[in-house]
Length: 209
Length: 129
Image 1 (cartoon, rainbow over the protein chains, first blue to last red):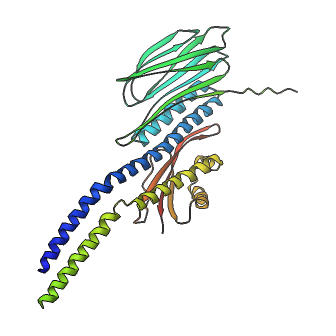
Image 2: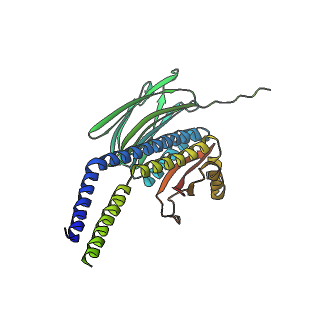
Image 3: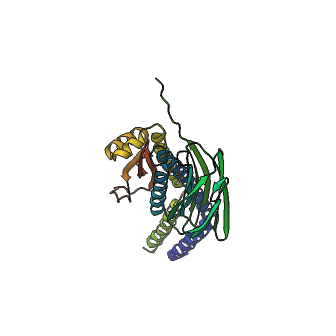
């Protein structure tokens, strides 16, 4: 056997090894990579949800809670949207003000597409709003709740073709905030989505002498 | 003389196969994936621990990167090299001198107590040895 034959045989062997490697291991490794990425995205999702909740809590200790809530949620959403390619979200921040008798509802759309939104509130005037919110837009709607009631149900219905989502939150009329977050991390390998409702009552300290 | 050349060709062919096997099986080996996973998890866990223990947010609010790196050095394993940055908008590229696989972990910090910050900590980490 001539020496060149060994080199030719070596080339065939290498091609064979590459083929075997692709058949056996490549899919497994790709799945492992996707799994690791999804775990990492899961942690990122947890971090994002916590920071949305933290923003709502910061707003609650500001003098103008509704405006602060609106600003913080919008700023956080814009920041995340610019920073994470796969990120999109929709948020709602509600605050019941016993002094004015009004419930303000801030809604922000960062779902990367225009969304048709319907907001309804029980025992309030007006009973509802319907509007289109473009991507990266936020708005505030106000309801005046009827005197004598202690709880209002606020329903948000948002449609982004082909999917429609309906969520209802209970707002207790006592310096109270309820926030709703729909956060998504979507790219070619990972499809993560989390919805969360966060409520918080403002405790008014009364000092006696 | 011919026999000597044949032997050289055989040795060359064997070396070719040997190198190819090492190269092919080293690409994306499960061990490499595991170590990347472990480093990434450690990096996130350290930032999370610093957050829940109350040391992360004051440092981010102050924008104190030396203090952040000092805290990170306490918790990250000794065989993990790292570089960190506190970013309000986008993070600038840092000069990382390593030929190792570098993982990047972003940890978002919305605020501290009654102050909204809207920042993130970016941590680059790699295995030193």
